[in-house]
Amino acid sequence: MDKLARATEILKNAKYAVCLTGAGISTESGIPDFRSDRGYYTNFIPEDALSVGVLESNPQRFYKEGYTILKDLEGKEPNPGHVALAKMQEKGVIHEIITQNIDDLHQAAGAKQVLQVHGDASTARCERCNYREDFKAFDERVQSGEIPPKCPKCGGVMRTNVVLFGDAMPQAFDDAVRATEKADTMIVVGSSLKVMPVAYLPRMVEHLIIINKGTTPYDHNADVIFDGEASPILTELEKRLSE
Image (cartoon, rainbow, N blue to C red; front, top):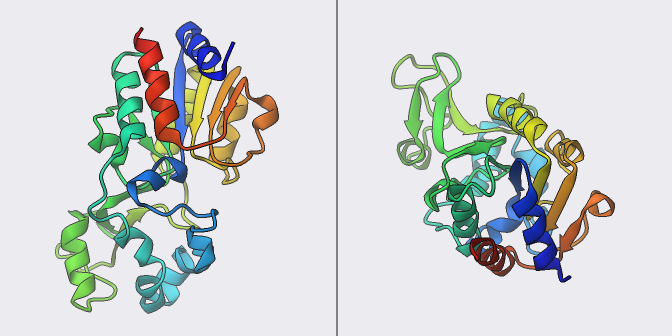
């Protein structure tokens, strides 16, 4: 039995399947990942620039360095991998899509139950009154030199809704834990499975399918491992699940 046949069999027999995605699913949409030879770590260390500490103590540096990751997301579109997962969700093959990504491309592809455990780049919020505004309006003020941007409602400091290094995990992570507790099967797509606490989730399921470029710490636990680009594998998997 080939890998695609085995993965198809596991998903068809799953009582409850969820998906966990990382940066690797969005590289085909033109968004850099973190650890590849073209990733963000080749230019700077995100933990140093994209952190709460830098945002609060040195906002000029934050908006010069860490903020570039958010700007990279502008104008990006979902790729066939995002579309295939949305179709699998629509058919009930998978339930929640748990994502480490902040790019909203799962939703753009039509997915409904998306748990963004690292926040989202499409909105900004006030740290004092929790006023929300979309990223475009927020970014216009950043580009005009208003650093840090102030809340138009209460005058407090506005910040991205992305979970920065040093932030507490959002409610979406608690929801992801509950979803995984119900699951017997998980598909991991494009994640190195090295970033905690999200990397704990795969150990909670009985069956594990990994689609990723390179190895992960969970390879020895996986039922099936695909080493390669996500889109062609997910597209073929979705096709077979429809047969």
